[in-house]
Length: 354
Image (tube, rainbow, N blue to C red):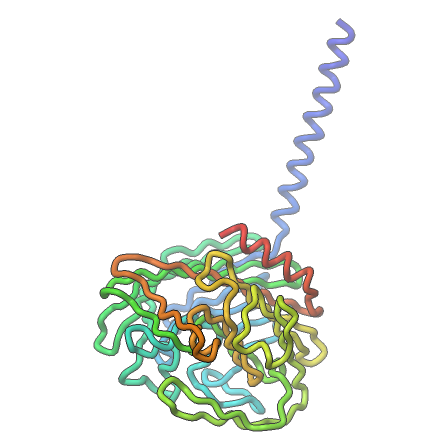
């Protein structure tokens, strides 16, 4: 009888300890970084706030012709995206007006240019437009918020070629900020052919300080053969550099393939890493990189012909009524340049959860 009483006593102690542990864990979780959405529909944007500080905004401005995330900030509040053309800042470049914030589109879908629409500062009569339709879900939370949107890829006549559904996962971890974008495209206007071009697909245009130092003008040609000169600017405060998961650095990363790419540098005294991760389920994994020293940083799984100098060609397509999904992760660190080991850990985690 005494042994039974002792056993019951220790069982009560054990249960009390167990309950206390769960309570403690729950308390820790409630002290996370709060991700909150501020819906400013009249301004055509939704602000994503983390502990009261702006992380980014989901925007569907009329003069941009696609939904974007703009601006994008570090945990310290430093803006890492270029201001032009939405909010130009002194000393930055004013080329490629269609490079606004962070976006997802492509340069040739059934012959229509979604990537370059807006390059002249106004709508291209022959360009495609991605029109925001609705927010399907907004879930705020500790350390992570979920935004689900729907949009329509339209040809110049207004006919829908693709229906888009996108999940944005906004994640906060101490001084790390993460954006996971999961986009599903469904061909609704017949077959959707993504004709092979370098002009795509998941891109961000960065602040002048995160560009790679350059002493010369850069002359670029678009798919129509039109030339754009990217003028050299003073390198004061410019400190960016690329490094890929394969160890390739600098402007040599253009057209190479890698599972992730890190653009690291300083804005003032703040060390920053901006990383884009590809996903094993994506087309052409590991992706090709359309990354330029003047501040364009883009993953393009579909521009095989340009990136292989004509040796290969893809012309990816989505059959009428069918869908394709693209998954990308952005990692932004503040105060430290991430190591390869740290980035690989984030990339491995990304590959497992979607």
